[in-house]
Amino acid sequence: MKIAVEGCAHGQLEKIYDTIKCLEEKENIKIDLLLCCGDFQTSRNEEDLTCMAVPPKYYDMCSFYKYYSGEKTAPILTILIGGNHEASNYLQELPYGGWVAPKIYYMGYAGVVNVAGVKIGGISGIYKCQDLMKGHHEICPYDNSTKRSVYHVRNLEIFRLKQVTKPIDIFLSHDWPTNVTDFGDKEQLIRFKPHFKEDIAMKKLGSKPCEDLLNTLKPKFWFSGHLHCKFAALIPHENDKYTKFLALDKCLPKRRFLQVFDIPHDEEEEIKIKYDLEWLTILMTTNHLLSTTQMSNIIPTRYSNERYCFKPLEEEKNIVLSKLENDLTVPENFVQTAKPYVNNTNKVQLKQPGPLQNPQTTYLCKLLSIDDPIELILRNSGESFSESNLSLKTNDSSVLNSDNNSEEMIEEPSFINDTVEEDSSLSDSKISRSTLSLPEPKNNSQDLFFIDTEPSSRENSSKRKSDDENSVMESENVALNNSNPKKFKRRNFNIYSNEHNS
Image (cartoon, rainbow, N blue to C red; front, side):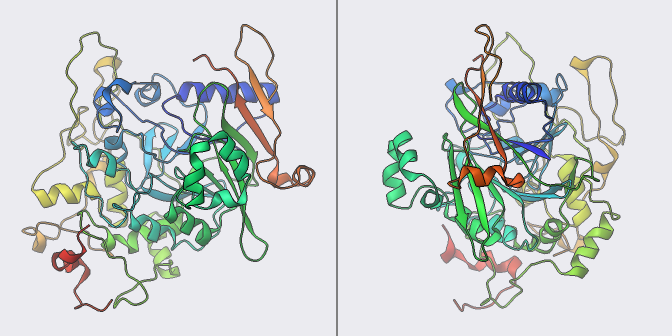
C-alpha cells in the first residue's frame, strides 16, 4: 500500500490533492491513503474561523469547506489528527473521531484505526505542561485562554494509548517527541533552524508525553509536523527494533511537505477505515476516568486502590465485538452539523457559535456506553446543545435529498435517535455518567515538481534500496501556484481534591 504523508496542511487541501495527482501521473503509481499531521483547518464556515487561535487578520476560508459542503469530493481516503491551528469547535464534536467530510476522517483527541491490516495510531494537539493534568473542560464559545487550551494534550489520552498492546505500524503526532533530534542530523537541523539550538541543548524541543509514547509503543513509523521543516531520525529500541521518525514541512512552494512510502498490507482487504478492537475496548473500560473539569485528573497507578491496567482482556474485547455485530468497519455516517460557507459580499460581524451535537459521536457513545465530554459539560451546567443550522434534531429518521443545494436541509439519520439513556436515579445530579465503565515535466508555464530519493534516516542508502519496506519517495513541491490519601470513589474524587487544582 502506498501512503502519502503531509506535514502541516494549513487549509491547502486542494493543493495537496493536486500535488498527489501530479505525482501519480508522473510516476504511474496509485496512492491509497493520505495521512495529515495536524493544522488541517477544518473550517466549515466563517463562524468556525473565530474558533481558531489566530488573529482575525489571518482568517482565511481556504478550501476544506468545499469538501465539507459536497462541492468537491476527496480523491483519496484521508486521515488526520488535530494541531494547534484548527477549528476546534468542529473537532470537539468528534472527541473519539469521525468523518469531518466524506472520505476525510479525524482520529479524535487520540485514536487507533486499521486500514487494510495497517494499524495507525495518533494523538491530536500540542503539549503544554500547565494543561496536561486537566480534564477536557473547554466549550464553545471560547475565551482567549480556552481557545488555546482546547488543543492541549491531556494525560487521559496518553494513558489510554499506553494500554495498546498490539504493534502499531504508523503513529501520527503534531508535536515532535523530545530528544528525537539526538538520532538524526542535528547539526543540519540547527543550520536550517538556528533558533532551535537552545531548546535542543536544554532538551525542550518537542513533547515529553510523545517521547513517552514513542518509547512505549515503538511504532515502525512516526510522522510529525508543527515545526515546519523536514527532519529524519532512526530511534533504536531493544531487540534490534527501531522507529523511523520523519517530520515534514507545511504546504508551501519549495518546501518539503509531502512524503510517499510503501508499507505491506492485507491485499485481500479493501482500503477502508476499520475500528481497532483494542482501542474501542480501552475507550469503554476507561470511560470513568474522563474528566471535564479544570481540576487535576488523577490517573490510577499500581499504587492506587483501584484497577490501573486497562490492557484489553479477551472477554472485554468480545463484549465490544458483540456490540458491533462482529463488523469493525467504520460506518460512512458523515452528516453536516453546520451550514457550509457561502461567498457572501454582505459582511456581518462574526461571532463564535455554540456547541453542536454530532450524530457520529452520539452513535459511538451509545454503542460503547461512553460519555461525550461536551454533553457532560452541558449537563453539569444545566444547558443543552445549540440547535443545528441543518435541523438535525428532528423526529424524522431519514436524510432528505433536495434539488436546491443552497437551501438543502439535512435531517437526522436513524442512528441519532439512539441517545445514551440516563439513569433516572441520577436525574437530579449535576453530572450523570454512562453505566459502563520527483522530476516533473519542466515546462516554464507550469508548476514544477521534484522527486528526491534522499533517505529519510541516517541509514546507508544502498541498504535502504534493498529493503522494500523502507523504500521511500519524497515528493517536494517546488512551485505551487500560490501518595496515600483517604480513599474515595473516582466519581467523587474531584470533589475532595481541591489541593490538586492546577
